[in-house]
Length: 174
Image (tube, rainbow, N blue to C red):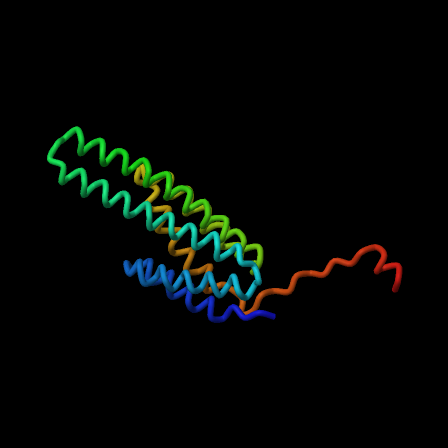
């Protein structure tokens, strides 16, 4: 059985650090935790989807920040609004795609490890990201971050063995 002890520690501490405002350090630790889960389960898709989600969310943040900065520097009100508006639209689209990939990764973790809390975390992140526009999303993102800590620390120490399926032919042979 593959070990998940390290993944539990790396991901759990990373989730805590993200929750308390040390986002970049927490992000790196969660990335290591997800990588260890991917290795332990033998499912490379878990890490691949999470890594793409991370790349898209970082890119979206850079675009959002850049568009606000460019908008401020232009000195032209209409051009500023256009720059910021375009940046917000592109950034939001990238973030939503990133969160969808993260959801797929977390759903795979839930399936492979039996920790259903990852399904809930992923769903709350998606709904929270979409509802951030109306501000209630921030509360949902906070709840998702808290549940993410719980999900990582709820991981078993080793990957549960999958139930073996026996065919009718095997049953007849016995």
